[in-house]
Length: 180
Image (cartoon, rainbow, N blue to C red; front, side, top):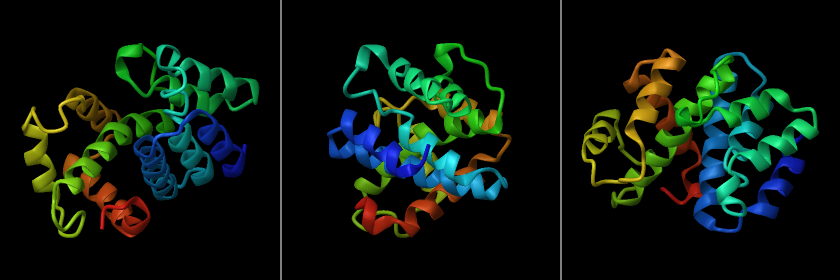
């Protein structure tokens, strides 16, 4: 599957700007991590892009619709990672892709939320300030902190380094993402 085909799937099922931006931001972070780990960056990017593709159109069936579609297309690796991107679904973490998607999904969204409440957006955002916001349970209350913690542990990275990596990727794309 290429990105054009993936983008068509995403846009057929997803209409809200916020969810499209989330898909794009996770796509960018996953692509960068794929490059960082010497993996297939295109596959990682597409996995990030499509991880919530069915969330808006089929909320009761998320992520089963996108997983089934990917399996039909022979994209089992991506399908498995997407099936595993929430620990409470009980899917095993077998590959680095599986672990990276879990580690990046919630935290990328959280960092975007941090940017939205700062007058300077992402400019000057530090891991320390993100971690301070993580401790405030009322801030971005729907973000499940335990998912972030588990993802970071499974990926085997330090939280500060992981936050900084995501900030760096988002900062390079701040105009497109509207967080500059």
